[in-house]
Image (cartoon, rainbow over all chains, first blue to last red; front, side, top):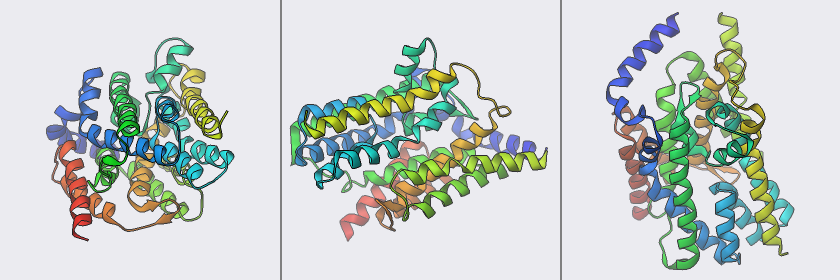
Length: 242
Length: 102
């Protein structure tokens, strides 16, 4: 009850300045919500294209990878493992680990997708960290926001890759522009409104704690997947209180 | 087929399958486990983990670099209820200026 009152009070307070930008629905709203990120996404797509070229990857392979895998960290991992002379199996393993988080994320959002199996399969491809985060609404997912934001990210990422493949080294490194700092700030901005009771706060702190503790001792990708376990502890807390 | 193409195609197929598994198999059913309580907590847990790793992880090491300063500046903007665009720009500009200065 206390949590409910707190929740209501906080969401009323939060809804005043935030309602216009974060509570809209529709494909256009998803696209608008993701627009602030597009320069960074395009820049990283460009840098993926440049890096893949310099690692000896064919232009067509880079572009096909952005169109099918559509996940920055996994693609950079493949290029860096292969570029450093690693095996194909190592490159594949690293990328699959990095993308494994999409399993629970897509499952959580599964009721947002519509239609038959093929359509659901295709729609689910527009799920990436940013579109998932922008579309979540109190544990549910706004289908149109997810698809609109995902489509913008898809075009930006693939288009950026194509530019990078063609333009090569002549473009600036996104890190020089600080664009790598944009993503943690984005995720912080998206998680902040969710932290309105003890359970959500505990899940977030534990998730971040698990990820940080595992970073030095596990392969990249594992820390974020393991962090999903934090939501189970929140469930236990809920039960003990009820 | 070159090793690059094998990696590209296998990773692409695996990623498509990972993303599609839940939505295709679970259909449009709501998840069980009491009114989306787990899903409710999955978002804060995963987003916080993404904040932590994207700000402080460099491959398999924890580092404190310009991204942390950018994140801090972004956090100040969030507390001041700045719009998302401002938060992102403040974080990027802080990291960029620090890199320029060092």
